[in-house]
Image (cartoon, rainbow, N blue to C red; front, side, top):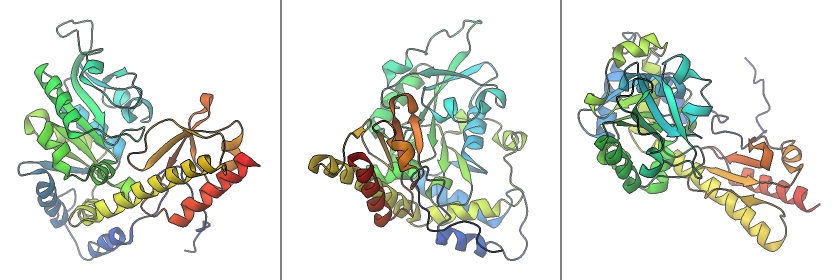
Length: 355
């Protein structure tokens, strides 16, 4: 097959736009020869359990799945009875970007809380953490946070510990959506378990696709008492891969060495470079009318642009509106974003805002 797309086109719309890291492709090829037992009874899925134990500690169990929505929906479903509800930030992926799958597939009520920076706090959680025993109210039994958040911000381990303690004291469990967990580890310069298992997270979704994988995430159960029935729920939710070795091999490639960190550090660095270049342009007058709406702590940059600039800039570089009503946009960097990509983007932004 010939290449069907223009490989010179670059964008800042999503870290899902990038291709597959060569080391991940090599891992898929290495797992390809011969026959292996299907549905997870293969050598690669067994090895993946050992790799996750190295990062999160003994006694954890990982369930590879196809995608992030599947990981979140299935993981949360395993944590809740039919009458349970999840408290989440209003910007959470499970609330706004999963097509209603938590509600329609898992039957989960989401109690969402507005936040300025995408982060929950014990005080914000208490806005919805009430009504236990009231048969007229879905029972808040899980808190879900995202690391790094949908607004590109980070929780410190201390902040997660405070949330976990607050939730556990009230009989709730803590779920973490880790679609960009590697970016958080790179930015915090901490081991994965330091801001998950060690501070009270019970179940997490581990993301691979946004960090160089072709497809595949994993539900990681850190506290077995917090989750039930995943072996059956994964199949029920159409997330059981028959050729699971190819999902597991990708996650092994990311986690067995430091590829997950190398990729994440690079995408974070490119976001920092983008922001710094725009700030420098605002200071010297080569860029005008741009304001930042969130701190740049991982691989996303959030900003507002002058009227009409976003659509003209998108003629050269694709990216998404975040809040079109106030001209807010999101620029995401990937493991393969280059300094040249960033510099060209900033140059075009300057040309359009100062012409």
